[in-house]
Length: 424
Image (cartoon, rainbow, N blue to C red; front, top):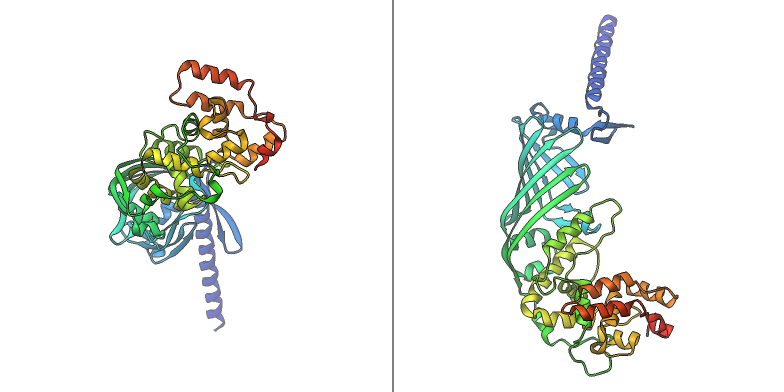
């Protein structure tokens, strides 16, 4: 018995030594080189930086299939259930799953399901398909990826999908997705790099139209009491509508309620760390926000806004959209609507404002309360912003524009009583 115990102890020590050696070799192989993409992993009570490229290579090797199959992994998007095959192919399911788009705010989009298929396509190359949504309401992105020491380069393509399916996939939990009748086709190409998280998207939306949301009721809507000037309401003409278009949406008369070019430009600028989350809303989308969606910073709200904007362009037309926006826009200190703002701040009907006065009033639409406080405190108006608006006002002939720019050098709303700058 004594010899058996000694033999068992020797065998145990050998096994432990071999296990330790294998663990040492594995950790050594997974140790990131200088500048290599790395991730901190908790190993029992220890934390260790491991090479992400090496982890991906090990996880996608056929010999690792039995270790991966049936496992679950928790990520920021949700819990993914893994299924691996001995030929190196593997699948992953996440249901429900969330998609965070930093450029559109911190609130994620919720997806009913995401299903990933992947396979090796050569040395450090992979490809496959990503399905978003479930059942009949799903879209498929074909993708390929190239693994480097510094990260993963990913390209994906979505070919000619019905726009209605995209609405169901990304907005299945919003009420408009059930009521909206959506027409059109959508496609995109995507290029991304990890771990930087830089994403370039090139979408194409063709024949996009929405009905069923009831925006035609806005043709005869009555203004809220807070937005009425006390005078007989009439369409606002003159320079102010031109100034508001120049300040808020210079392509207002050209786009179909949304501006993909501007959206992409803002998407790119919003991706940097610490970047201000600038918007890309058209006047039509801003009107949708005022009436229907509220102003929370989320991708879900932007989708709802897009649906309403597309339908309003069809049911209301540009002239009614602009007049409703002028009638409802907040101008700071509880002042609602252009007519009331003109009378409170400049003691004139909105249609009687000159180009400089109109450009100044339009400039307040960005952070009106903060701007009015600065003016009430004796600061100068933002002449550079007002000048930019005057230059963008259309139509305006050259002589009138030059006259307005000359007037701007001497004009200041500080000559008004401070109470009018602080609010009604």
